[in-house]
Image 1 (cartoon, helix red, strand yellow):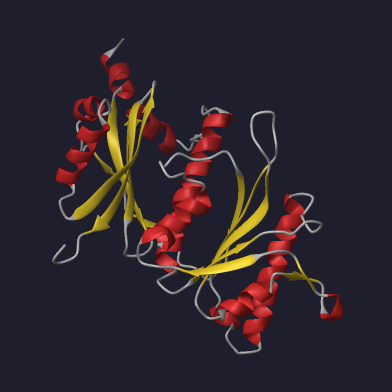
Image 2: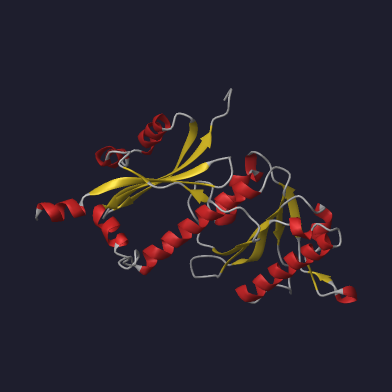
Amino acid sequence: MSDETQSLLSSFYRKRTYWCGDSFQLVSIVPRFKIQDIEAKKGRGKNRNVSREAQKNLNKRNAKKTFRLIVDGNFEKGDIFLTCTYKKGYEPKNLTDAKKDRRNLIRRVRTKLKSEGKDHLLKYVAVTEYREATKDTKEVRFHHHIIINNIIDRDDLEALWTKQKGKKRVSLGRATTNRVRTDGDYSKDRLAKYMCGYGEKGDPDDRERDWTWSRNLKRPKTKSPADYLFHRSKLESLGQSRELAQEYFEKKFPDYFVTLEACLENAYSGYHYYLKLEKKRRGS
């Protein structure tokens, strides 16, 4: 192998930082080959050599990251977490029907707020969740999780989970609300991760989800990537021990509470690290 080829195939670690609000940042520290940057500058499709399954998993991971950041940057303590389920006889036949019910609910909320001159203030994120039954898993019926800013009465909101109008108006099922909190089960990030499908141990489940949000939300930001901040040999050795990796990143980011959310091994490129950084406040 020539020196030039060996140089192109050499790799380094790239750090990317993402945020939307001021509660936390999400950081990825992943290996990258020099040849990838060269091909990217040529305008070559960056995902050309990525398998469909790998690209699908990457898209899901990025979508979940975006969703968490959007929730953090746009909602606060006191906002409303709404869950809507269906009673027997009113279940949607497919995702298209379920999304229609979700749109109709949001439209009713807007109509209610418009009568009070507040419809332009509405902010929301919504997830429709389900799973078809297989020989190994049970069916998960269609249901919806929604976070709405605190501009509508909770009882009024629950009462809007209906179908049709006037005397023909009927309830579609159960609608329950809770307040968003600063910590615990109803904290912003805990709710966002729950809506994304992360289990108690941080592992994703196998349910299908369809996400949407209002257009007036602040979007996540990112800094320019930082390269060569971490030695490859060090990060490769830390991949063998999650505890040592946690300690290492805590020292690297002393101004933050660090959570090592994932350490994924790729046989081709190496270890991929994903962190959550929460800014330490005075007295903490």
